[in-house]
Image 1 (cartoon, rainbow, N blue to C red):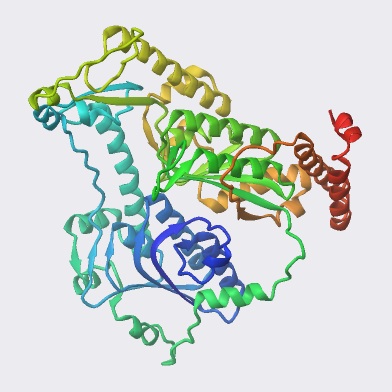
Image 2 (image 1 turned 60 degrees about the horizontal axis):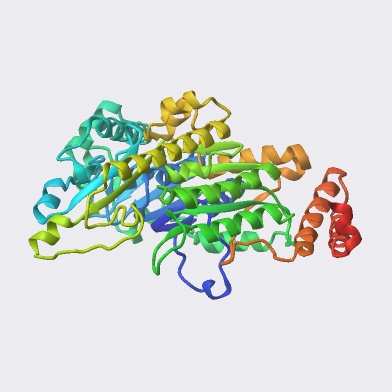
Length: 542
């Protein structure tokens, strides 16, 4: 089988809309890749998988998940051949190191140089132009605004970033050492000496050989006969076409995505987790009787505290009715952790960035800049704080105290929500909060994460939880499906319509608990939906 990976990698993609079916896939789906791996392992004709990794765009946690899926093929005794026609950076070599044989383009470069994080401190630049920032933060490590008010990195920021870099570096060193059969110390030496031309990378053992893409079949041939190649997408489509397709949708695991910055509403062209769309998807997952468990897929650095709280409220309602597992991708920090705190289980990769339980706010004052430009501002007001936090003046001591009091309350609420969700004391969570960023591995050690792994681990945990209500056999057949929320997140305005949906959901749950046949379930659900429209049923339900 032959698969090309070029660009973004994500755990799961929503079913394409009609007009999207003929578009080029936006990214590689790990759910589809895992299904492909399973089929290759089952198919006796399949010798292995040839992956052409042209480029990888994503974080370390997604790279960890991608490598883990590919490694399953090797563990099952099949061949995994990876071709890097354009060379490789650190993450690409990390993924490719799972291969049984690894080739790189003849004139390409292999550059596993490691990881670097940089922060620019602009305090002096702002002073020169006459802009004076005010930063308010709760949490020793909540350092999002320190570059505005400092000339250099704080000790707390250095401590947490060093810990994240250590986690990334350890993971890459261990994986490359195992995959390329090298000692960890030797891998560190090779990374320090990178980059390398293709022929040097071969001599050093980082790759097995150089080749153009059309030369790969001959290089992996056995007995001089190149293997027959089949495009992975066509193979998987043909396999799925032979599967029985039910007339109506089966019970499933609903996947609600929180991707991007958390905002109340997005602007044009912005990729964000908007309050409206996330809440709509959560409500749909809660009321749809076919969705028996939910995976909350989070890839977000946080954002609006108000939007995060409103999302959390709806997600908490969902968790009260259905099994809920949070799956952290590359980043689930600050608001990204806030919305997930009520999940029955949290799963993350060792290289996920998570935590950052804290609050930060910042503003700028441009009064010195206006003075330089000769601009005079006159403010008329009614009310002592009517012009509070106006950009033309600094906050008064009274205003500053009032705002810090609000931040203290927000921070305490954040810690309390996490403590309630994790079933721990306030003081226990506050110790590991303080705005500190953790790797997934460190987060598991501190109790912020329940299990290490990717989307498959989260789905397995969701099936286990769902088995308590529908039985292990039926739960084992639950497959993940992305829940798309509409624009309008509000519940139906007609209370009888809302009751009808709840009655139908209850009917399906009861029928599954009684182990009724699927056809009886459908009839029972339809009957309940009809009855719920009557006043008598409405009053009875109350």
